[in-house]
Image (cartoon, rainbow, N blue to C red; front, side, top):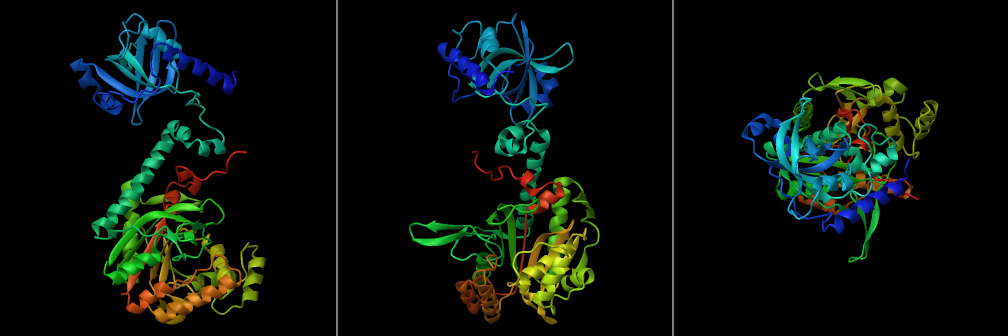
Length: 493
């Protein structure tokens, strides 16, 4: 078998052969008369008309030898077979002085090349709808052979690093990313139809707000200050807009967290966050249910899914689960009254790995142990104040907050708050987070004093909700890395 470099050398010689005949191997123009999918859908009508068509695309297969060649070309939408015959007077498009264009095709064209073909529609003896070529032109000469469609790319490293080939060779993967695009377009339309205004907020921040996570840090040369890439999609900024009088906003954008990877976590991902003034938590639950059901129906045509070993139906009942009661039921620990030592001992007994020995981190770790058993859909409610620094205090219990998380297939797939708008209480919560930072917790939330100042001017009651592409990964039952077009890769040695 020829080596990679030997195959590349052969193709470079073919490029030189084209150039020796005055042919540009990379022209900037092309002149298709139809898209391939239009020809495929309307083949009988176009065949009857007997008109010549010009198509462009990449060659995905090349078969035959001697006096007849068969190629499949693909233009990003559909594919069609083209037939070249030696006994037909084939020309090189736009350059009639080039003779023996059939032989030139045989000698210089490979699988992977982009070409333009003109000809007449025919049905072959085997009954296959095809284009009989009367002229052709090189559009892009490929120098490295693409993998065979049947075998594809086997290495995960190669699949992600050469995603363009992975997608090219997999109809299933093409369909996945088309669905993902529709997933976000349905989401955007859902909020636009309800008169939410789409906004853009900073991705570089002096303090990271809206979540508890380790940020990426960089330096702003012009201001000579360190800044952080945002860890949420503008939560504290969108709430400033609530004070400004824009009472329904949403943003779709990227967030960045300098944390570990898992089937559910990556360092860069797409999230949506929305905020609505004067909407209470119960109305927010209905909004979220409608949103998830709308996405499921419009993108997947069903509300029933099986993923991660769980089955759930978004059109069914959404149960409510109490955060504190659920942990106590499965572990015997009352996180509101237990000491840090008791929590640590229980986590070790359960063989749960955890980072940090403060009560906030251990409370979260105990919950994550319990959530695995919940298929959902469910609303997790009544979170302890210690794990919800931006939520309003529960009206019936000062140790809890008014928020919920959507639980599906043993994981949190969305988070909502009755947003805290008491500036005095918010300042106290930030002080607690600042203490955690000083004690070494690099995921604690940075205080934002200008945000507190905004609250002092007054922000109306606000419902806030956010979810990310993890929801899509659950719908298609794939690790989140698989549903990103270009996941980050380590550079090759």
